[in-house]
Length: 335
Ligand code: ADP
Image (cartoon, rainbow, N blue to C red; front, side, top):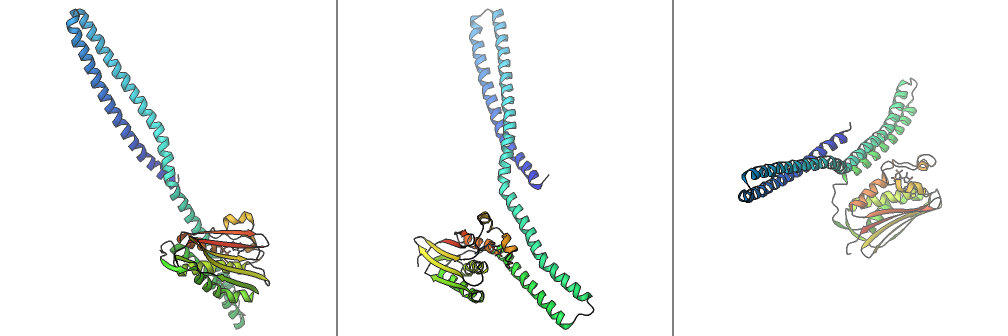
């Protein structure tokens, strides 16, 4: 029996106890009131006929009324027991359904946490295993030269950098729930700083990085917004073709909303994958295999978490082979 099943049963027992206390309490009250009323009626009739009937007739009349009273009370008792049995069965089923419903969000979030921990451990183990194997092989190699050792250290350093990026991503996912965004921030300056960070990578890949940054004020955490823009721009460059690709970053305010749009003319995303790309550790097959693009599938889930922390939403439109556009929509504040 799972922990949630036994918790659901306990909760059911509590709900059912409450239902039964109310039901039995009401039944006892109904029984008591009806009983008092029936006894009073019988007494009144008996007193009335006492003067009217012959003593022998009166005796049999009062015995008859007494029997009728007892039968009436027994019928009432039977009905109330039947009613309470129905309440017990129906209430039990309803209480169990209610208990499952109460526990479902907790069950889902625990399942998500367990999945997340499992995925995180798996991702952490991969570079660690690679490093361990390389070091063990090198230690067994009697003819290891200084050049080999330097190569090994360089390779280990790459794995360490990946582990650092991964642990930073995990930390970010774990901590940003608690930060409260409350400063007035211009999305344009957050996007500009993020674009500057990736300018060199774009030019190395010969991808044109264009910006059109109009003021777009929101209440937020500047560093978090910079990180979010940075993730989107990094992806746009990463998933663009070498030479000739274009990445555009645009910010603007429209009425009560501020927008950040990052579009690229890259590989695009399969329609079937669109609903999943914001999940933690999700990477499309093409990112994993064909293009061999670095990443752990955490970027978009971090970006989404930051956007939601700012009461905003993020959506993506994409066309396979033509490119994608990520649109972030956040509540604006006056400039
Ligand atoms: P990562 O980039 O580390 O794989 P992300 O969470 O940032 O992780 O992205 C998840 C997946 O979404 C990527 O593996 C990729 O398949 C897809 N994706 C994200 N951005 C783009 C983009 N601009 N163009 C095409 N695919 C993208």
